[in-house]
Image (cartoon, rainbow, N blue to C red; front, side, top):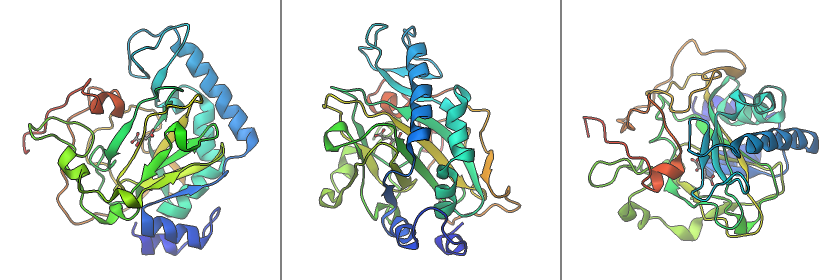
Length: 302
Ligand SMILES: O=C(O)CCC(=O)C(=O)O
């Protein structure tokens, strides 16, 4: 789907002006979209996951842990594929307003790619360095976006998501270092070229939804506040955008249609896209990649 394809269908939950802002900037924050009933159900789901996470001592396919995680003071860094763990996270997509928001921005036929919860625990939750999502999961076209639901209020000191408006129209950066090792972030040299005076920081009350296109450069600072910043993230795409590589976060819902119909034709953007490492055997998290805890070599072509 191109923006012109998407514009053919009227918006369901946001204004046309906001949709145009998404196309222009590569990201928007929709304040308070998810209401209190959904939020209390989602928080109950998170509480059950945190309770389960207490007894985990080593990161596994579901739980990624901060280095000082303990049963007494659990500090989860990420939960991967939460829809497979707690039904409410899938129900929000299929029954709640999030699927309609995705249809407003990606077109009437929307499918699920992956989901995770990034916790950013109080007093130290890790930084996410500048990166684009496309190098992690290139698709045949660019109607792919990440939708983040703030499960608690998120102010400027809690490490809110930040984007560089307009960067989705710029280069697709390599996320490998000079030695061909996957780092999951822009190189220092590329990051130094970014115009940081133009950052948009997405703060908002609980239930606000951040959206960024998978080409948009984004990241977030450490959370040094006394409040956590649980962010429920879904990657969704137009039905006609096909992933080139194996799904790193396994889920029984992968490629499931959440609005409209499955595609009968794939849509291809022209171009040559760098491929990520082969994660078909598993993947931990962007935090592990960026902090050098998990290394991936470049594919043979690089
Ligand atoms: O949790 C965050 O602040 C950013 C998440 C993100 O950019 C990602 O997981 O790709």
